[in-house]
Length: 282
Image (tube, rainbow, N blue to C red; front, side, top):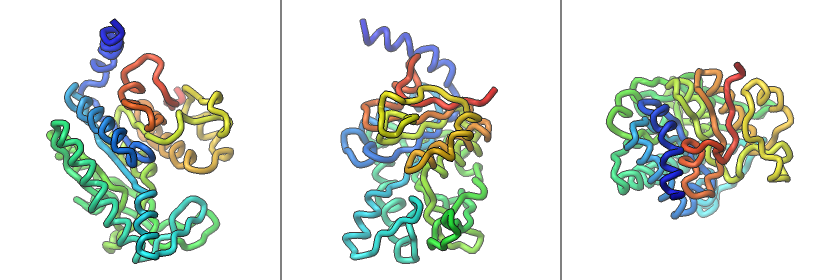
């Protein structure tokens, strides 16, 4: 009876989301644990089967670091941003575009849905400009997205699941490493997505980062913006991306624990959800 109850609880949401676009950013354990990666792929395929239009955005920081260390390259961060010289951007593209992107595509295919792997260079998807560290320090080929050209996504999403690696290029063809949370928020806003979901390695946004009991279940984008100055670490770019997505017309943004099996479905298709939901201010 519990399974039937869960299905009945999901039905109104399936009806509400039918035909809608949802952008899902995958990172953390959901990308490094084979079992969780497989669960994630099944969840995304299910979204497609019930009539939604999922778009996957991914980064891959831990594996980039691993490959750089294996190649004897210096790994350095400034205010959470990876210092990225030309040799490092080559590794970033190799790992994100050449390996992880295709791993996700193949996992989706293995569960019955064809997917198309992309990066910001394809179809000029991302127009990127150079980004400096907050203190003005030059950290190499780290970029921020100026514009997302959605035509290529609109065409692909009709029949396939787009899977986007978070790199892009400027008007001169120089490649840049782009924060995956920023990329997902920008894609969600440009596509006027109904939902944006960010998978991470905590159960949601905690008012006190060290206390799981302080998880914020629901909050407005306005209140989130007011609190951003007090947030540090990896949660801040996720919250900034959520706010940007909401400001761009997204109905709601969610921060969800990717370590929990089927976390995307539990957040979207149950009354209580499991993570943090950020909504428009009005």
